[in-house]
Amino acid sequence: MLSTITLRKNMKTAIITGASGGIGKELVKLFLTNNWKVLAVSRNTKALEDIKHKELIVLEADINKKEDREKIEKLSDTLSPIEVLINNAGKLLNKPFSGIDEKELQEVYSANVFAPFHLIQRLLPQLIKGERGHVVNIGSMGGFQGSVKFAGLTAYSSSKFALAGLTELLAEEFKDENISFNCLAIGAAQTEMLAKAFPGYQAPLTAKEMASFIFDFATKNAKFINGKVIPVSVTTP
Ligand SMILES: NC(=O)c1ccc[n+]([C@@H]2O[C@H](COP(=O)([O-])OP(=O)(O)OC[C@H]3O[C@@H](n4cnc5c(N)ncnc54)[C@H](OP(=O)(O)O)[C@@H]3O)[C@@H](O)[C@H]2O)c1
Image (tube, rainbow, N blue to C red; front, side, top):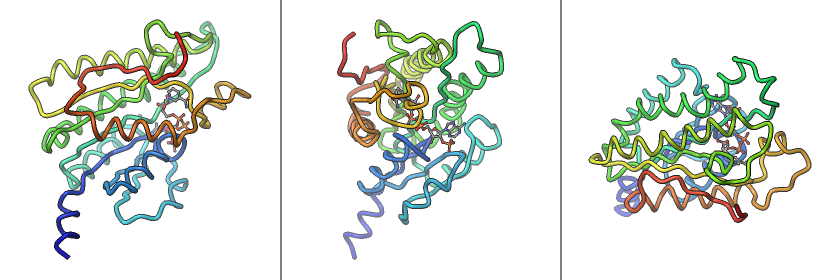
């Protein structure tokens, strides 16, 4: 009985966006298996119905919408403190540069840069309340200096560069607070997004394998690493 109470008291909370599939859903499962409470955010919540767990809170929300971000903030107040926020939701556009219209560019930047920006702003008070908060932004090798680049990804990869930059700036601005900000510039993992962007290409990693790296990084490194953009890739350059 006592050990159950102690366990519950020590239970930490993670918020994961883009939780309905790919890497995000695998992350949700990993956090739960490792005794974390999880707030899983995505537009499609049906895809999470097969995960039955008492510490899972599923929130139907579009991170691009202000009113939905407010829902996330409200819920996070009740879960405080938040130890980990993983900005995993992302939008990919594979289209020649000249054909990209304003709306498409806006959509990509909204999901990959503006929404994480606003969410971090809103969740900051809960993230600095605990032992040490960790914001992990999921970037891309396409948004990492010196990596191989692909035609058609100007909007997507440049937005991931912006997310990486945001990470470094937040680490500087909040260096005296109880929080770390890092960006994982991940390489290819086999997900729906990758299959859509590169039909026929087989990634060297599954979503589960990539999630397991992200989980370890997010839960163990807040004290040691801050303000870094880390390439998670086995290929060169
Ligand atoms: N897979 C790769 O090879 C690869 C490589 C580099 C970087 N990444 C990055 O890794 C992250 C995860 O990608 P993935 O491959 O796992 O993609 P995925 O399978 O397409 O999953 C993306 C998730 O983001 C959610 N999402 C998208 N827009 C959203 C919004 N406006 N509000 C809430 N949720 C939203 C989607 O859920 P709903 O549609 O239900 O909302 C979905 O659960 C992304 O940031 C991606 O850019 C992936």
